[in-house]
Length: 306
DNA sequence: CGCTCTACCTGTGTGC
DNA sequence: TGCACACAGGTAGAGC
Image 1 (cartoon, rainbow, N blue to C red):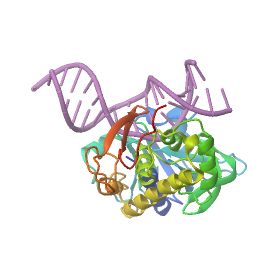
Image 2: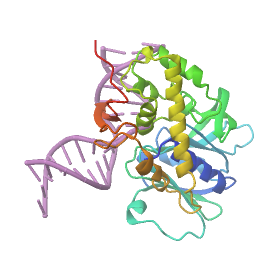
Image 3: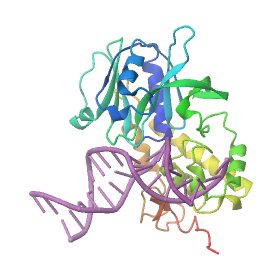
Image 4: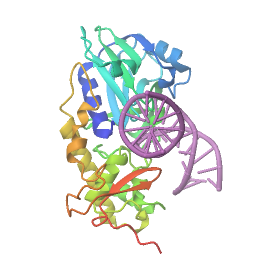
């Protein structure tokens, strides 16, 4: 599933392959895949036609392509969230059909470009969506990827905190805010208004690296431990980006293909019963927040209930 | 306002 | 072979 490193890989790929192109045609095959767009799918398509893609940015798992604007018009962007199974596949022209049938049947939106290519939004489980959204200012701008900064973010992203691969993120400030929360560590790590981009997989990996159990209360963390956890989350996502970031193909942005990291390098996520890489204790799976959590019961002792 | 819980969605895998 | 159901999970919004 696309996590922050995969979304960054897609952002980087789009930056190299579609910037400067103009949208010629938009086909919405599944109306549900256009969401958070006032006016619905028809307006979505109409609003995109004829627009040039001038920049691409990301915050957490949100990704957007800034559109050129007529003089005096409000700034807008093509906003995308990949959900848990979304892909943005760049088709160059002429483009041989390499996809299997499963991929073809899950093309939800096709955005034709003036170079004869297209961007296909493919999404099996339909948690992802596209929209055209107004861009609004944030106090210090939004990351444009790899250290670049753009001054605006789409409205649906305005409440989302900076992520851990954003050079402007102040980890000490995030650690302090985390310790002020009245909740448990994993819940805080997954709260996008505190820090964005960490999903269930990287949360478990970061907690393991920091030797923390996810159900420890945030208020009992030391400043150093909270900071260590954030550093661990940034580290594991950076490694994943390095491992998966090279598989971008001009023809085919395969999110799953970019995730070879998952099967090789995960210490605990999905490793129930397998030995902890540090101490060989079998990894356990528990239910938390209605989903699976994986941890080492020796390295990450749960809090003692009082 | 801060925190918690659930609906949303569909293909895959498993048990009966 | 067929059916029922658990599971995957980020986000928004309802609820307390």
